Image (cartoon, rainbow, N blue to C red; front, top):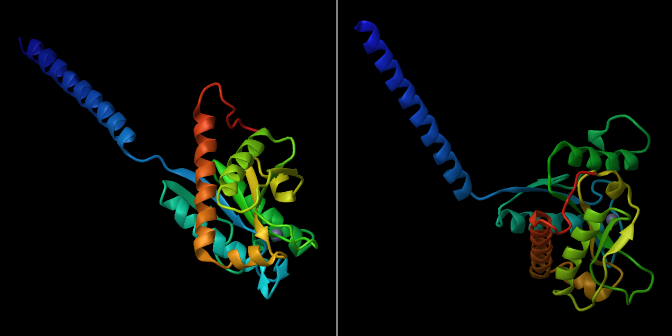
Length: 238
Ligand SMILES: [Zn+2]
């Protein structure tokens, strides 16, 4: 008789535990769908510290890159992105690679090393262009040649940047150290030409930089939507 009670109680306990587990599973699934999905992006403001990059009209590339990076960070964080920056102040990144050749090379390696530590959906390196033909202007997005995902991301961002600028540019294939060595989809955005007076004026205008940052964000959204869509080109591990 006592044995029968023990069996009944054990069965009831077991049922209670199973019901609790089922409830927890359902609660977890519902909660996971309600919470916003955060996507991780690495922003890499080019140059910094003693490496100023290009310059013109009294302004230096490294400062514009950093300012744009902070604006882009704010825009992305407003839209459920998590952001990691390779630098947040006027310093270079060479300290991530203590040993090796030149400081310049260690700086580039440091950026690649940092980007490789996190599982980001994309890397956006920010730079400023220069050309001896001062009429050249407009933002141009570069991707590593023969990297399909980088090209798709670059074209998606370029299309949006074209909608906020006076000239229409095309995304371009290139062979830059940072793009070549980062294993996740990476693009390098030259936000304008410091050698062109109008671009130079715009690059000092926070409202314009915010429009560019919004364009980059929309391009990134489009790329990620395409990559989630079955049958469409999407990011694959490289
Ligand atoms: Zn640069």
